[in-house]
Figure 1: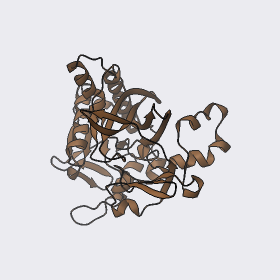
Figure 2 (figure 1 turned 135 degrees about the vertical axis):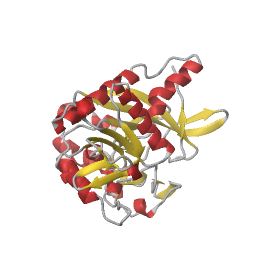
Figure 3 (figure 1 turned 30 degrees about the vertical axis):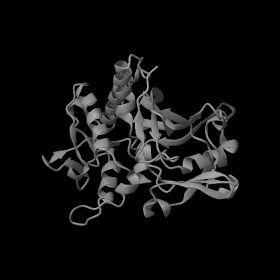
Figure 4 (figure 1 turned 45 degrees about the vertical axis):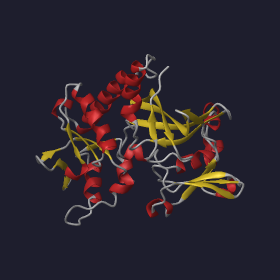
Length: 328
């Protein structure tokens, strides 16, 4: 809570996952992926390459310029909070050392270099904490602005090589503004699936007339399965990659996620109106399709900048889903 309270920046980016089914006429946002959204490069640059190759138009023609403008805005806002000029700030991009997350960081770091800056890029194991300072351990370089593509709820339980907990030092560094962590605490506030249950439970009491349109675009969600009925989709409040999810239809379990790690299944669940994701056929094979729409923070407003499609063999989109290039 200390970290969230001291972070007054809007998230840099978020991906809204949609059930966009023209057959059933269902158009609902089923998740907000805000802290560590994957699938970024594929939607915003990959689609452009694929569309051009197949003689189609780019479905996201303004995405590249929007992302660069948003990135500059986020960096300048962070430098202002530090009381330093942006050119005098050390910027670092880090994530778990896997192709997807480090690839996303490499792409954002490359965009940052095009802004005339010289960011660091390294895997998470080279991020060190010393007192209230964060630094790149290989060069002992102090970090001012950190893009840490890593779930906050995992960071709380991290330890260094000597078995010392890292969270208290990281919390203090952020709270005392020794470092600005972009899209970390601010992204986490919108990440939990319980946000959807709050909309259902409290919306009628607190929303103004101009906000009631959310009922058209958000599925009914509750922390109690009985409030939804005999058909629903259940998911852990801090679920990722479809882990721990399962669908119930008329009281019977219809399908379960391929991943059921204890970390997820031991969490509190939310229960969401059961929706039918669309099916698309690719080379005579049928896939479940999930649409993702991107929003970027620009001048404290969220600007749309991209759309993409993930397809999956499973009815539940998981970590084995595929990027499906699109063009218009």
